[in-house]
Picture 1 (cartoon, helix red, strand yellow):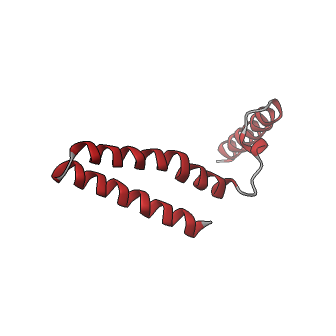
Picture 2 (cartoon, helix red, strand yellow):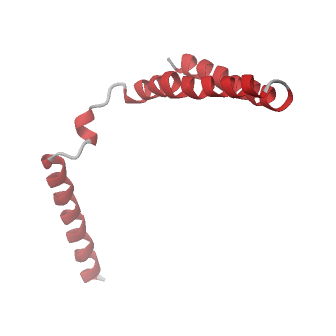
Length: 91
């Protein structure tokens, strides 16, 4: 998966470079079309591949704000603040 993502990235970067070249030195419309296709490819091909690779094996519930997660964060923050106040009193 990682090699595929790198290959797609290199192809899209080459497309951007080719589009800029065409826009500056050849036909401007062709360059803009190549750049546009590269942008679409990065948004609809590269980004989903990258996100699928990074989210593999992770649970979405760990990263969403549910009532249980908010309560757990509040409990964790209150425990940390209690620990800090105890250290301050000892010093």
